[in-house]
Length: 89
Image (cartoon, rainbow, N blue to C red; front, top):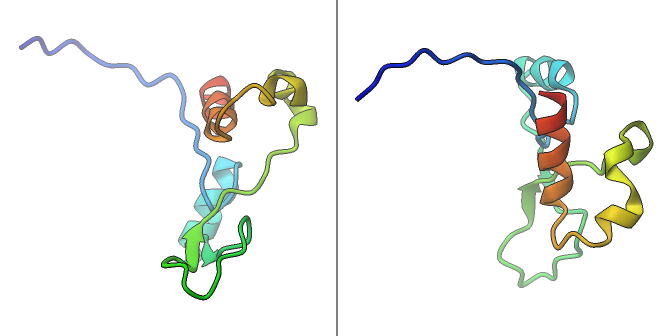
């Protein structure tokens, strides 16, 4: 197995603590988890999950590649978060 050196050229993350990496670190060091009651859906009393880590929506205006017209074709909001992290990293 080859042991070629690896180079990390960037780091970014989107998590329930936010979309800004510095803010995420600050909140994590303060002991916050980002886990809270579900707000994106209204779970009924019989729904098996009542809490989750939810990522806040992204203001697309600062990111021209996140145009609402483009996002309308995506089958999942995960594409938006993946594209954002890859572009910023």
